Each structure stands twice: as C-alpha cells, then as structure tokens.
View (cartoon, rainbow over the protein chains, first blue to last red):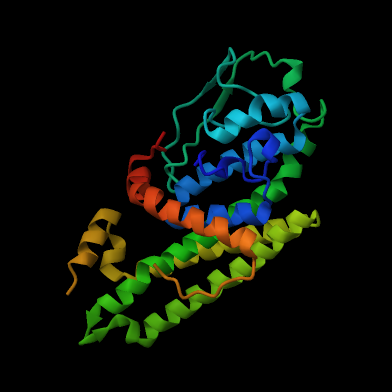
Length: 257
Length: 44
C-alpha cells in the first residue's frame, strides 16, 4: 500500500505523498472496500484521520517529522489524535487488546490508555486549546472519504451475486430469469449508483473547498445505510449459500451444476 | 466481477489510479479478506 503511494494520496509530493484530492481518495477507499471492507477502514483511518489531519493541522516541523514515515508505511498511524500527536513509544501510553467486533473485524480497534503521559509542546496539533476545531474540521472529510466503504460494499455485493444469478438453476432456468431476483438486482444497482453519484459530487465539493457539513454527513449516511441493505439482499439472493461462511460459500458455488 | 455499471465522468486523473487500485485490491487484498475477518487480525 505504501509502495502505491496510497497512504499519502492527499499529501503534497514534498512530504512523500502523491498530491491528489478527496475524489481520488474516496475512489481508492471504494476499490479497496470492494475487496475487503475491513482493510478499507484501516486504510481510511490511517490515510485520512491520521495522515491528512497532520497535513491540515500540523506545523511545518511536525509534517516533515511524521508524514514521510506514515506515508511510506514504515510508521503505523494511531487514531489517538485530538489536539496533539501521541507516539506509541511515549511513556505512559498503551493500548488495550483490540476488540472483538461484529463487523470490520480486521480493522483493529482498541482503547487508548493514557497514564501520566507527558506530551512535548512540539506535539500540539493546531493551536493549544483548539482541539475541538482540529477534530471537527477533519470530520467532514472523514465522512466523505469513508463513504467509499459503502459504495465499495455495494459494488462487491453485485460482484458476488451476478455470477450466481446465471449459474444457479431452479425449475430448469437460471434464477436471474425470475422477477423476484431481477427486482433485487434493480434495487441494488440503482442505490449503488445513486450513492456513487452523491458521494463523488460531495468529494468534488471537498476538492473545491465548498463542502458543507450536512452533505458530508448525508452522503456517508446514505452510502452506509444502503450498503447494509445491499448486503442483506445479497445474502437473500444467494439463498442457502449466502448464509454460509466465505470458504464454504465459494466451494459450494463452484460445485453448482 | 460485475463490470456493466455506468462509468462516471471523473476524468483520467481519477480513472487511472482507480484501475490501478482496483487491480491491486482484487489481486492482493481480496484473497486475504476472508481470513482477515475470521481471524480479526490486520495483516502486517
């Protein structure tokens, strides 16, 4: 990921990034989510919440110190950024074992534990006492970039079910010839492209510096809720195979006549 | 792979990296996706 330059997709070339915008970023998140939503969340957290926040709010010294390593993939990002930068090696900082989550499981999430951590003044991000502004200023971009997880999940739902629609036969014909299945596909297709159209437009607004908080929130609301709906319909379309684990499902589908 | 969806007019600056990320994700990430979710561990 570091080799492709993806970790610093929004960062200027001077700091090791590739100097692209939020539209490119959301498209990258979408394509990674199409392969693994978990990996796309880890990617989004690192490249947006960590790397891009330092780009937006860091001092020149902070950017030169942290960005190249974070972008090349040598340093792992932490989400422990509010108004200051914490490094894992700092005395008193530790992380709990990561949680056993219901979804996005490979994107390790843990509690940050601070016990009398001494943070050097140089690590203050933005202005002292203005941490909320730092946090909230990045929230809009975070919403938009992570909308790509939803559009990517919707794309992968169609990737998974479409071959099944042809391969799976009932009553002597492919199940894709039945109106019930066609209705599901039409709904999934419509919502996927509606979400993409909205998300890409909001990402373009980010690149123009004109994004509004309500659109950033609305596009992630729509993309993520419709992704949940698409995943539900994909399980339904795969019927018994959809209820089985990935390895069994793939083996089961391959064995279909 | 469902490839019949419409193409949005996002320009070559976006389409080229999208194709690159798509190939990389399908070749490298997708084979690991099941294990990552099952084992709850991000590959280092």
